[in-house]
Image (cartoon, rainbow, N blue to C red):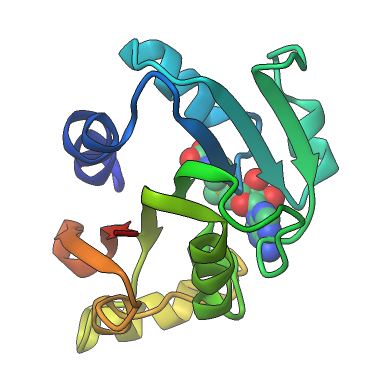
Length: 177
Ligand SMILES: C[S@@+](CC[C@H](N)C(=O)[O-])C[C@H]1O[C@@H](n2cnc3c(N)ncnc32)[C@H](O)[C@@H]1O
């Protein structure tokens, strides 16, 4: 599968290094709550999960009941309606390639991180050369606007970036000291 290696890196390396028992987690572009399922499947501890997505249909498809520990909110990742320093871990899988201004969403997420917090982004990217030009052909079909791995490297707070699948995927980990 196109995203398998990147997903494995999130599961085995990025998320376990960031998460802890008292972590409040924001899932940007959560879809039906995929990363809540991920945390539960991996048996990783956390104190609170907030799923955030533009699509009410996606949120309606979430199977988890809203509780004190689990909440879902609708909105646009370019403007996040949370106060500064609300979260310890912000996770986003396969949403950033749908954004017109990914840099703005990174700045918004950064604002919400507490000191010591982690922002983990898995996203489709546009590799250089012919592979990138091939992507140009299918991007409009999937309403995507992929950034290049080099642009990801300009995001401030970047701790580590790993590329997968010939540069079509990255996992970027940003750390707020
Ligand atoms: C490919 S799905 C990924 C869902 C989930 N994160 C996963 O890994 O399965 C992308 C999600 O991003 C959401 N999305 C797209 N643009 C968004 C935006 N500007 N703000 C918030 N969510 C957005 C879509 O509604 C969709 O649920």
